[in-house]
Amino acid sequence: MDLQLKDKRVLVTGSTGGIGKTLAEHYLREGAVVYINGRSEERCEAIAQELAQATAGDARAAAADLSDGPQTEALVARLEQEGGIDILINNTGIFEVKAFEQISDDEWMHYFNVNILSAVRLSRALLPKMLERDFGRIVNISSECAIKPLGQMVHYSVTKTALLSLSRALAELTKGKNVTVNSVLPGPTWTEGVENYFDTLAEKEGKPVEALMENYFADHEPTSLLQRFVSTDEVASATVYLTSNRAMNGQGLRVEGGIIRAL
Ligand code: NAD
Image (tube, rainbow, N blue to C red):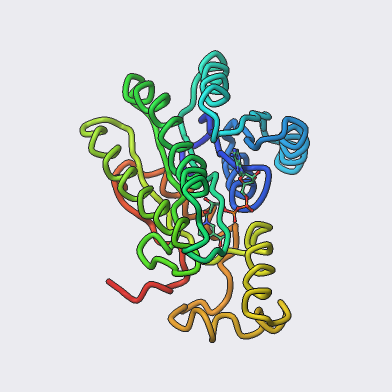
């Protein structure tokens, strides 16, 4: 199927690893020009080179700490100079198991800054240009816990719910335009970030990580129909497809293995 993404200019935030890196690879395989973002210039360069070689595609480093306003503005200015962005995937996100009573105000603010404001800042800068050019796609990578909030990650869950509202509210601004804003809700997906999450969870439960992993879905996610981790390829292919279709606008696409037992 031709998804009509050739030569589209894509920024995938947080794409030096995990879901973001696989997303970047999928867009490159569709012939898009893809900007690789993370906080380290060196790592962005390395991943851009690796992906360019693997896909024979045009991958470019675009380092910036997106929790920082001025760094984000500088990145946007550079991207505009190079022709602008057609597809923005707000994938950057942090997560950690932490007892609710131990999450300080500073940590709450940090979660809002990285998980929500990074998407707000980039959308605020890029959406008006997309509307002007009458082409654009924005996807906010939320999580299944946006609608099934987790007691062991209250701060994270709250930010992911907020992303759903942000996506729908921004979609309201696209009426009649070839611009869409959606969110994707991955379920537990095997990435480096999740590896760290499991180390902490195992420590909290006083179990070896192997024991926790063995029965993880039976013990912790009994409603999962997949009964295994979602792969980064599964999240990426659903996201890429979502950005190929103008009629899919203002919605949340669940790629969570059927964990959420609801219509
Ligand atoms: P990950 O930790 O493996 O990768 C995150 C990426 O974001 C890295 O490239 C990191 O360098 C980058 N990053 C972090 N802070 C940044 C900042 N301030 N500025 C720029 N880049 C920054 O994460 P992942 O598991 O691939 O998750 C990606 C997204 O998917 C996140 O938003 C996460 O909440 C969401 N998600 C993940 C899962 C899962 O199970 N892995 C499930 C649901 C939702």
